[in-house]
Length: 249
Image (tube, helix red, strand yellow):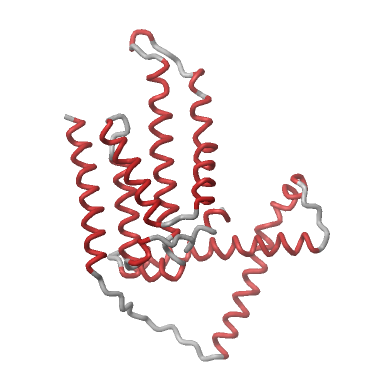
């Protein structure tokens, strides 16, 4: 969890030049294209790989993070291939070993593409940019606030976990695997107490400074580059739907 949270704002590619809302839309559309394209059609496979690699390069994720994401995808989808020997083969259906690997292969390719696209999208967004970009989209305000709170609270709990771990190491608590397992059941209680105390301090500081909640309007302006990028990803999505539809005929 903390590794994915470290990706926020780590990208320095060309996509940083467009507005946050456009970055979010582009990431969603590219993700949808990877889900729609047929993996076992040569053209679909090439477009999935090409669009994913292009998006990763344009977002500028550090190479060490790309390596970590690929290793994570490998470990995540490897068990699917280990189950192939136990898949029942029905001679009447003409199934063979190649047919048995089709489903794990498709899940692995789509899953890896989705992981890279999502990681690249959050890499070109700071938490503040994510909130600004999401608020500009035509999404119900309740859903927007819920998503923003989930992201911010997850990041806060991850940072809190790091601080708790550092405090335990300073106090000489064993850092072995079994010691961590014994510590996990107490983590939610420690989280709750520390977060409650911090929330009370923040509320007191805001009240002391006379802080008032006011609705702010964003001054984002759509540039020509935003329009070109949006047109490119919409064309990609339209092409994906066409390939899927033609393959179903």
